[in-house]
Amino acid sequence: MYTQGDLLYEGKAKKIYSVNDNEDLVWLEYKDSLTAFNALKKGSFDGKGLVNAQITALIYDHFEKQGIQTHIVKIQSPRDHICERLKMIDLEVVVRNTLAGSTAKKFQIEEGTALEKPLLEFFYKKDELQDPFISDDQALMLKTVEKQSHLDEIKLKALKVNDVLFELMDKSGIRLIDFKIEFGWSKDGKIVLGDEVTPDSCRLWEKGSDEKLDKDRFRRDLGKVEESYQKVLKSLKENI
Ligand code: TMP
Ligand code: ASP
Image (cartoon, helix red, strand yellow):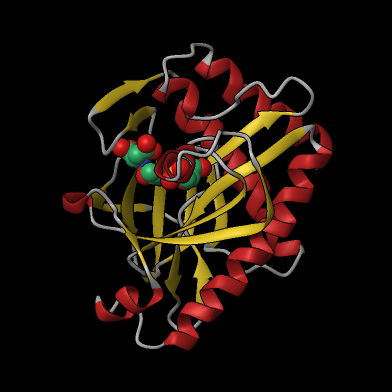
């Protein structure tokens, strides 16, 4: 049985605790808070942590079955996961299937424009700099990883996540527009998927209506935030 140790870090959506008597693990607690625009906009709803923890648990279990290694070791409670302690890589890896959000805005291309092939982008994970877009060479200059081959491996893994997640969402009646994931180094030197996959970190549009079922509802004040997150959970549960 695992017991919760000290609080190591509090992020915008999760708290990370140590696990007593086990240096190789951390205890992740999903919070009810919602933030956007680097926490300039703040909100929350009761049960948000619970719904996101359950969504990540379902998706990561599916990933493992499809050969994608994730950090989850055990579902401790519906809101708490015991995870491998990874040395996180300071990259936000974004994959887009349909253009939306920052890249649509940057190039003045209409949101919803289909992409011929998935578009992968790196952002440097640094709150003080508002997580800027970076090139491969900049990622190396900043020493996010040691070598180009690591970036290549991250890209391959992110594209595999895209394939598996796209299909899972599609089966659940949801269009996977884009998402952000994060990787870390495991103790045995592997690049492992960490963090979360939730409506906070993805753009998810309902098939047919194109209704937004993700954090854009909060970012853009569209209402029905909680309802939409619950809809994603329900659809996944019914179709996984
Ligand atoms: P973007 O269009 O704002 O660059 O976002 C791309 C995807 O990444 C989208 O699914 C939302 C997600 N995302 C995060 O998870 N965290 C962030 O801090 C940002 C900016 C985006
Ligand atoms: N994740 C960032 C924040 O919490 C930005 C966003 O998702 O819009 O502020």
